[in-house]
Length: 390
Image (tube, rainbow, N blue to C red):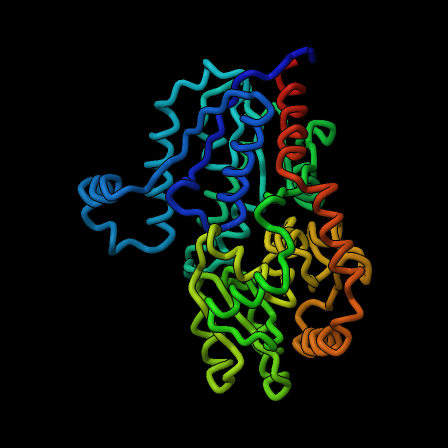
């Protein structure tokens, strides 16, 4: 038996993955809960839900809410989340694992492990919505939340090394108390399929059996580089290569405007996680064209990992956590960021050499099986929890 054996953990977040299972954080929470239970840990979840009741309460308390600036709406909603977490009784748990700075900042436990999936303040600004005049005020507000959450934490888990460097350099958190644990995948669901299964699912989705499909499962925001993917699709519009975008976000209209004359492009809404697996399984290439924007870089992209787990050719930019996973020409390909020409070139090259690339597809799957199974991933979290209660 291990010393300091972890028997019970509270997973907390200002996002509820049981309500919205779009996005890497939400999927991470579901997989971690599942993995911890399989490792014989009792798990209790406390997720804030912005329900209809909460919305009504918000409007009642703040009659002019809908007329507020985006910044003031964000701050007002944060106050509701603060009340939710402050009334919880976290002292009964050995460890509380907060999965964002808002839940971490307002948690009253003395045994907090904070998991950071990105850069809260920078990403909020990058996603758009704030007026230029409001950005300085929000930066102060966001940085204060980050500092409060980080100062409360006994240990911190980051999903890539760059986020670890950010925590250490920006907030002077002890380096030895930060662990890097890359994201995980359910390898029993995200897995390669037979040609017959591929044909059947393609028919269901309305794709041709011979179509060469590039799948871009990305939130439509600046840091995800989706505009460069759209421009690359136009470069290749005479090459019979289909580009399927799936996501939500403020840049959707710009993508549509760029590609409106291109019959080989489809721009879809966000697809629930239990449905999006079909798209991974039957596409030919998964494209992650992320860029460095507003000081934000992609972490360990879950879309990248899920594509690799399905045995697909993954093309991504060498930034953030992705450069720690992909080995160019071995288990995937890198492409220069912010270059539609580079994207178009490598996609066309992959199509030409497609049947010569089996080793890359196989290596991608092997790498995920070895390093990113959610059960092994949960064990790594347990090791950090044990350090936190020593």
